[in-house]
Image (cartoon, rainbow, N blue to C red; front, side, top):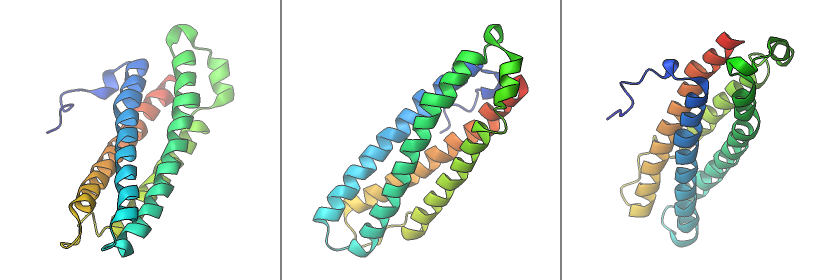
Length: 174
C-alpha cells in the first residue's frame, strides 16, 4: 500500500520536500541499516551453516552501509542546509547561485553517488539470489534477506525522490 500515492511531491515547498526526504527516507534507512547490521553481526558469529553466503553478504553490506553514511552526511550537512538557507525566494541571490552552479556540481555528485548505491545494491542482490534465502538457512537469515529487500526498495524511493523531484525543483529555481 502506497500511503503517499495522493501527494504531488512537486507541489511541496523546497523546505517541506527536504524535511520529508531527511526525516522519512534518511532516518528510516538508517534504522534499517542498523537492524540489518545487527542481524549480520549475529549471523557471522553464531550461524555456521550458511557462512558461504553470510561472509560475502556481510562485506558487501558493510561497503554499502559506509557509502550511505557518507552520502547522507553530505546531504544532511552540506547540500540540504545550503538549500534551506539560500533557496527561499527572499534569500535568493542569483549571482551566488550562478557561481555555485548547483546543477553541475553537488547535484551531479549526488546523482553519481545514487548510481554507485544502485551498483552496491545490485551486488547484494546477486549474492542473495534476489533476496531468496536457501531453504535450509536460519530464520534470522531469512529475516535479514527480507530487510535487505526492504532497504533496496527504500533506497529506490529515496533516489527517485531526489533525482526526479528535488533536483529538478532546484534546477528550476536556479
